[in-house]
Image (cartoon, rainbow, N blue to C red):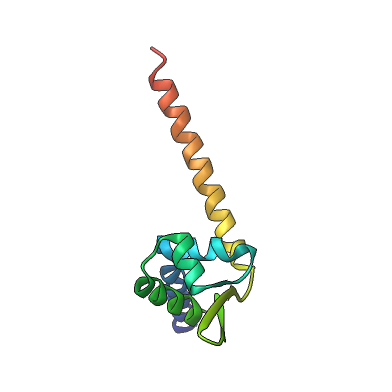
Length: 111
């Protein structure tokens, strides 16, 4: 049982580690509203194409994105919008943390 648990934790950690890059999170957020070509992603996100291609490949291998080719253009889309079931709670935790920090800073100014 211990070996299986260890493997499950490793798989989860690898998944989260692959998501843990600002450019990859930007891509996921951008594609929330539908597919986009690599060129459109480069233009919208301001990420160099070679770097973006590596991030797109990582997300595709992770099963987060799917790709389709139309002539010379490659289009990416989210494979499953359930990824936001992972990302939304993280955003909410960060909002709460920020609010606590703001309250603490406000109380420092009350002297």
